[in-house]
Image (cartoon, rainbow, N blue to C red):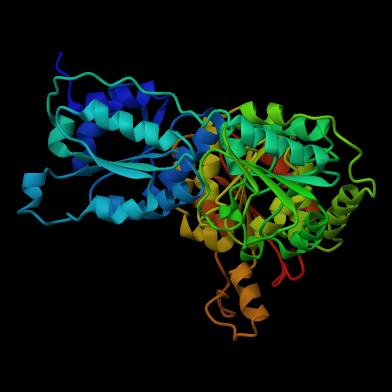
Length: 537
């Protein structure tokens, strides 16, 4: 039996833990798709490459399967730029396979042909063009780069001749992803001494801790040493957000920052545990003083320039944190963290009138505790990230580094594909759903009965709020006073799902309960008042 380059690519990905590949076929990737299929990868047809990439990410979050996105040359590759940039900023180890014409043909043939690698290099960890005789070696490099250190996307350009050609080679064994080991003893001792002396320590954890699977270790360490924990939005659930020591997610809400940053200013030792500031708003540049000791545990050197650290420990959290164990002195005798936690609950509590607060609180009560939620970019994402308590990591999925629109529904689809036994709920604004409405068809095509809550106010609410706050004229943010707006309930039914519009808490709770019994997707259009997010976050 002959072995083609496509067979080697498929076998390499399967060995590295890939179970699915997402994308839209083109003539240039047909052999590649066949190789993936023969290696056992299920090909998932989507309606847009952007949605396919987010589905791959959602599956990764729930199963750990290596995300794979496939695009044909030219427009297929260009369509995927957004989701690849998102994977880079959100630290997702995505393998992006693209078809391309052979080098000799590209010299005299120009239709749909451009330099994929030149376009993608600024937004990937690396870009490889596979060559005959070294397909396995190329795939091994790509997979190792994508999964090591801080994960990220790697692009693999696959010439048609390489995919179709018979290869006299076997797949190269894949190295398992690994983080840096244990920091040097001298650095550990200095950090331990500083932490042992701290009376008001506070910890901040983020996406690197999530990707390392260090939630239990972080939670245990903070509880044993009585250290309150803040997280980025990606880090929500690293500690059960119902825990008295957990201060929840932060980084984008000025209201939350107004409570948490003064608390942080009282700290004499700030412990950064897999914290990547790529999610944080500009107010988190240099957020601590020179007289505050900062200890940072990170998987790789930090070059972002957002903050300094007195003790940088490049290493694995699971291996490093036990070495920072100490006899904890009396800490936070003024109970300031608990006071801050109560203030956060008051600031983001349910309001009496109908609006986004009631929507989120009602659905939190109506949905099972193990529900996985996703959130699109917009005002609703900031508010729900503050209100929704997560018991475990990866129970709230969102685009936090790039903050791109049209991610919530495909993220939810991928998550449901990976965990069909768990309820999945997507929060999305009206503009975000309109941007990616085609993936509603994918929900039906792949039998994914997720629940979608659309916050409908006929406006780009977050941008309108910023526009108004800077005293600029209303321009390009409202959908038009003379427009009736999209009937999302009808749209859902047109795609084969169940669609309904709600305008009060009781109807929302009833529809959410009914949605959990259906074998198809449910779209609940929650119509909220204009400017309902004023003062919300």
